[in-house]
Image 1 (cartoon, rainbow, N blue to C red):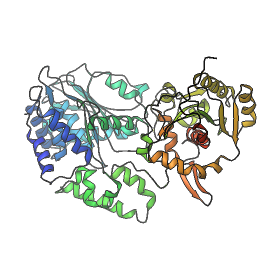
Image 2 (image 1 turned 45 degrees about the horizontal axis):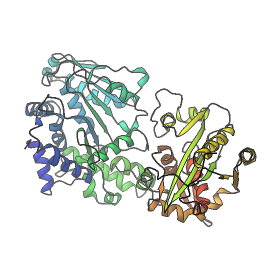
Image 3 (image 1 turned 180 degrees about the horizontal axis):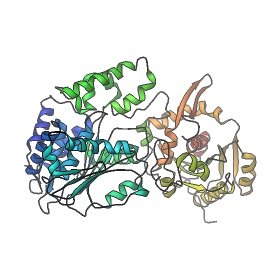
Image 4 (image 1 turned 90 degrees about the vertical axis):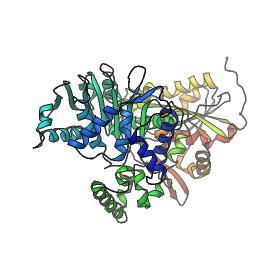
Length: 555
């Protein structure tokens, strides 16, 4: 059995009930006990490096918290066969104020030191803004330059833009996440600070491409949850969930995620340590100060409810689903990400032509048993995508909270960006012709907008077109079917982040006439694919007769 006192202390404290952990950290411990600690034939902890790092940090910076000492041994966990690191990626996600930046400051400084003893082990810290990128760098710079720390000045050459370990010639620098202005070097470690704010994966690709040129390459992704959905953070977070749930092998990525398990826990202050390890008992001086600050923010919510979402997301590290107003919860939307059943029955076609100057979405609705599969495709005007999402910006791959990842979705074949002042209706007509050849679609349900132009073109191709005069009038009728479909996971969208994004952009408004499906934000948060889905559901009853009928498209 492998043994390290910091790992053992942390696990033992939790098992005694002296440490309150969230479910994801409990799953992490389970994986460690199952796959790492019993394998002393494969792995070893480098105790000298572990002790050197902790002593260095506590001598020159601050006493490390227990969670930092728990993670440290896994940073210096190696394969016996070739002395390569077992974990080369560390995902550290927790509520704001937990001490992430302090942890990476000490790591960065140690990595370029003679104690680490790897030559040219350059460290880059990358963030969306220069101010954020400089935060940990400045902590190191100030520590080295502090009066009384002459021993550090002899070890490191510190300038305001770089710090060099004189013995190893390793350089620590800060950089912003502009892939177009960066070059992959020969980094030993790359730290992505507040990675949920990064607008693309290109910067990760650039820096990760430089790893492997020196020994023990590592990447650290640190941050708190944000408001960006279907961006890089969500991709990384789901990868961590897959690891913790046993869907992916527990090798390579070390996911340390602190969060509330349920939003109701926010009102129990003793549960806050699930989201922020700085609140673990007994509180140290810094923890007490932070707790008082967060407690004040919590109490202010009674009179300042506008700060509720930010508090839940940033302090409690919890992605909030407003179930009352959202058309579906985050988990219900994620449940649509399943493979389609065999699409061998004739579908209903649908169309949302909301504006000829932004998005137009087409779709096909299939039914099998109690499940509905919706296959959709969207056309988007380039000028709109440039103005609102930075489509032509070479750095915009994964988007951000304000910039949907149009380019990435286009590469996935989910939409097509057309460089036209307004959408040529023949794009829509041609798509449905192709879908008729493949699936046999004959009938198309569409909103009445611009249908005076489209309807003759579609009918000329032999399609039956049914207009919906007032699309909002069908929402109250369909609300029960929509709620039931999401709640019982009857809807399948395939792996379609564009459709999930559009669904997430919908809120439900209660009116005297019934429930309406409206946009959460009028311009940037598009809902066209979802509205096309609603149009198709309006005539879903007609699919009953077509279920499991095999059609001949050999004409």
